[in-house]
Length: 302
Image 1: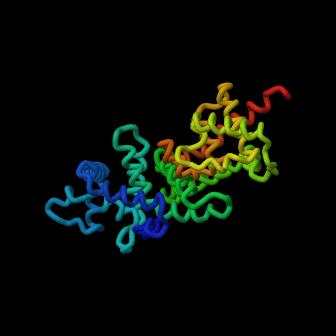
Image 2: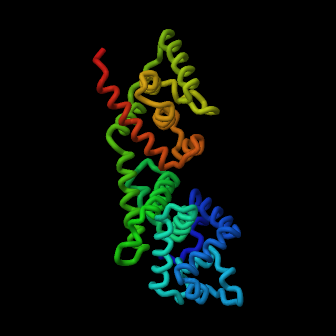
Image 3: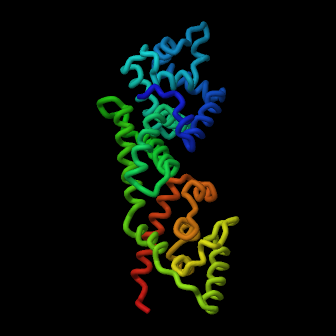
């Protein structure tokens, strides 16, 4: 693992938020007690305390997430690979469990792996053009958390951090590749279609389509409507509305398509509006595009 203690200060976005959340976790008395209990139960407390300067009469009570992170990101050279690997394996075993602390264990793993996640994110920005650093960072963090919870890593030979990074990178590449599927690229091509000045009838129809789309949530509140005035985008809105009426798409599916292809809402903003993560929102859009395409293929020719 790298010795970068605060990569979020340079990476920004989701990594900065993770650092802020981590500071709050370190200050939580329940979290501190849980971490101390883990280290004692796994017979790692003495070693971690010795190499992180926690040497007092009540050192067990002073062990905290900060010491755990220090054991996972060695910077002084005093920590051995064996100790770092043992601590990470113990965390991964707990993260694979089903008790109330499994999520916390996975969260500690994510924090320890942030330097690797930053590198992975930077490495994927150019190969998958059109995706921002923040978009890919959200996918990377979600993948890292999912792999940590999977229970696959701690049973493998070799260094667990390397195995964790490799599985996460594979997951990220697969997610980003799926998002660039041909169906999505076909829908994105509506931006390049020629647009002609609409006549009075088409203008009235466009007004009705925009009103219906707004009522269905396909135009986010507070967003200007100029982006939907082109014929190509209006036609896409009509297709989505028809699919929703026919039951081929849910309201959330319709928003996932319309927000991305007609008003260009970023995945970060869309996920925040929908109360989910950017990675989950991207997967929803990919599935929605597949459903819309399948529905259009099944319709009889006009």
